[in-house]
Length: 147
Image (cartoon, rainbow, N blue to C red; front, side):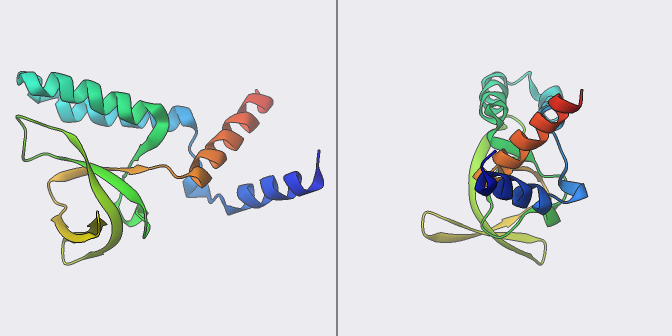
């Protein structure tokens, strides 16, 4: 193996913390579980049948990861959410680039504008960046080798 490539792989693996260790299967399962729970009681509204299908389609292209704790969001994370207040039309929507959390609000920027979002009635998904995807690919490859 090329020593530069090996060094790059080792550097990426070293950056993975124990709490970060999730496989593609873990993320897929958790996302599926959360979406099923969110839409469970609200599929009687026709819009939500299509909204759930679209949300799953977007999320299962492995572009998103459910945000368990808001502290998992990092500055400049691109993130999406479902506003649970709109129970009759639960859509996965782009909320912008995360800036910070302050006083029960998320501060974001979207299309050169700044927004303040009350987060108490949302569920969030963050977009996986290239680095996250490489880490997942490496972890999945290591798991396959170890089986």
